[in-house]
Each structure stands twice: as C-alpha cells, then as structure tokens.
Length: 496
Ligand SMILES: Cc1ncc(COP(=O)(O)O)c(C=O)c1O
Image (cartoon, rainbow, N blue to C red):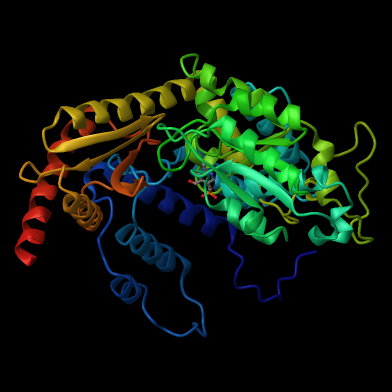
C-alpha cells in the first residue's frame, strides 16, 4: 500500500531517476569519447586528492540529487587513474567493457541477492550459465563453480576446498592443528594471495613450500617432487599444489601437465591460478601450454582481468561442486533452503564464503553475448601481439634491454648508453634509475607502466589487457620512455 505520508528522502520518483540517468549516461559517453586525449592519471598527491574531496563533516541535510550527481561525476573524472586509457599498461587491470557498466546499472537497479535462488531466480540461472561459459571458453571439462570478488577470493575458495578435501581429519570442526602440519607447494612466482590463504586458514605461512623456477620463471617439477618426498619423510602431510597459468610478474605458465601428473601420483589437490592467463588457453596457438589445466581440481580465473569485466568479478571453477558445499555449507534455521535434490534450486551461499552476493554475472554474461567466443579470442590475441610488438621495438632500441615476454606481458629496463653494464656498481644504479623512471612516468600521466623484479633486477613491465591500446601507440612507447629515461639519468647523475 502506498504511504504518501512516509518521509523516505532517499527514494527517487521514476521521472527524476529517468532524468538523472539520462544525464549521467550522456556524461559518461562524453567521458569515454574523451578518454584517449586525457592524461592516464593526474599525478596528484594524496593530500591534493583529499583536498578535492574536501574535509566537510557528515552532512546533516541532503541536497539536490541532480547537482550532487553532476558534482560527483566531475570529481571522479578529474581525479582518477584511468585503467581504460589506451596507454594504461600496468598491473593486470583491464580496460572495462562499456556493456559491463550498463549491466551493473541494470543489476543494481533490480538488486537480486544471489545468496539464494528464491531471492534471485533469473540472476542465479544467469550466473550458472556464465560459469559454464567460462569453463567452456577455457576448455575445462566441468561446468561447476561460482563468481566471487576477484582473484584473491577465487584462489582462497579453492585453497579452503583443498584443505577440507585433503586433510585426513575433519578440519572444519577440529581445526588445522588437530593433525600433522599440512603443507602446500607452489612456485616462488606465485601471487601473494597464497600467504593470506595459508595464514587465514590456520595453517600458517610456514606451510608454504616455495618451489624454485627455471630461467623462464616456471616451476621446476623435479624440485616439486623432491620437496613433497622430503616433507612426507619428515611426517608432514602435503595437500595441495598450485600451478600458475600466467604469473603476475611476467606471465609465465607453469608446466601444468607435469604438475597435474605429479598431483595424481601423490594424491594431492591440483589447483591452477589462472586469474590472469587462463583465457589464453582458448587460443589454438597457446593451447599446448595450458593443456594440463583440464586435470585441475580447481581453477581461479578473473573475468575482471582478461574478460575485460568492470571490477569486481572473479571466478572459481571446480571439478566437483560437492567439494565447495563440503567446505562452506551450514544450515542455520533462518535459511530454510534445501539444496540436496537433483534439480533443487541452487543456493550459492552454501558454496562459498559470501552470504549476500551481488549480480556480478550479468556484466560477464552480457560481454560474452555481445562479442561471443570469437570476439574474446580476437581481443586476447591482439593483446598478446601488442606485448610482443612492444618487446620487439624495445629490443631494437639501443637504450633498452629486453628481459621477458610471455602472454601479454613484456619486461625490460632502460640502460643508458654511457654506463658499463659489466660494472657491479652499475647493477644497483640501474635498479634505482628504472624505479625512478617508473615513478616519473606514473606521475606524468603519459603512459602508465608497473614493475617486476627478477633475480634482484628491477624491470619496467607492460601488461596489455586493454582493447583500446593500438599498434601506433605501442610503436612510440620506446621513444617516450627513453626520453624520460635520459631525463632521469641526467638528474640522478647531477644529484651525485
Ligand atoms: C596470478 C594472479 N593471481 C591472483 C591475483 C589477485 O587477483 P585480484 O587482484 O583480482 O584479487 C592476481 C592479480 O594480479 C594475479 O595476477
């Protein structure tokens, strides 16, 4: 029943919502058009950005929503780092599909809660289909899994499932200390999520065995085998091996087939962290490297990386959905849902850490439908080609040294022509020089790179998960970076 006397100032009459929405979409369309000509970042200090936000106290009264949205749009557009800019090539943060932004508006306007099917009938079924499509894209034989906030959470969910499945006692009730120390194995290039996982699961970071890598930053299977045997001989209980399909620093893909075979032989859970790289498995020219991924008990894959979904969207795939329920399910009386029958409605809250869950699937589902499998294959292939092109241009340039190129990541460093690379003091200087070059590039807002450190060598790093980057922009990068390199080199020399 209408309550005309109710004072609910947060509600917007439909016509006001329509007018505000139209204005916002107009402003955002202008923003997207202007993106290539903007700076990637403003280079402002935290104090400057804080000043722009202002330090007013919590407002006592409200304000006109049209003026508010206009002000907020201006604020956000004037003080952001734009990962959708064609010259943003840092970390593993992709350009976001515009249809995903519209999908988020649709999702949050309807606002289904994907904790349970009754609260999200069509949304749950769309998530189920999206997960199946992700698995299909990767060539993973199981359609099971769920969406989570990102790579850390996808890996954590898999880690907990492995811990529950492979601990030889009821670890959920008795805890991690109720038996011999559980151990996990992964390369030294594995992303830092694993430290959080070991720590928060009660196993402690001492449970982690960092396996050495070869000269292309890939795990050495014989070293893995030895570490497992050593721990078994010492009375410890190995449970899990993580293979990475696209390491965070250089995009290296571990020898997944060998690791999978080893896991089978030792009866260990095989998890693949493909948060970044797994979608490349769909490219026939890359498929060989990823072939072992089909053996995995679980895979982490981030739609907000190489499927270009707006943040946040991660995904964990599992061979057997029962493992997730065995790990996360409880049945409190205030959630009287039963999910045991064959065709029972799917209650996602039972399969992961989150209870209330957003409709993240929609933005991913829309993108799959907008461009199809072929559209994604083309964009991922182009990203890899851009990284290779950059690496080639860099190695042709006399003031750069190329280091690595894998998937869509290239690493390299600036080496001025007047330094003697053979001199041991130069090594330290080049690290300082390249770190300063990165700072200056990031402050300047012209091109946004990040860094990698390999064997204590500081490298500049470009990661292309960006459908707006073009060959023309890639071709001019070496000159642009070298110009900054010369400038910083001069400054450092003068400050000596
Ligand atoms: C291989 C890998 N795993 C996990 C993560 C963490 O992902 P997220 O930042 O989405 O939590 C990253 C982030 O770059 C990554 O590269």
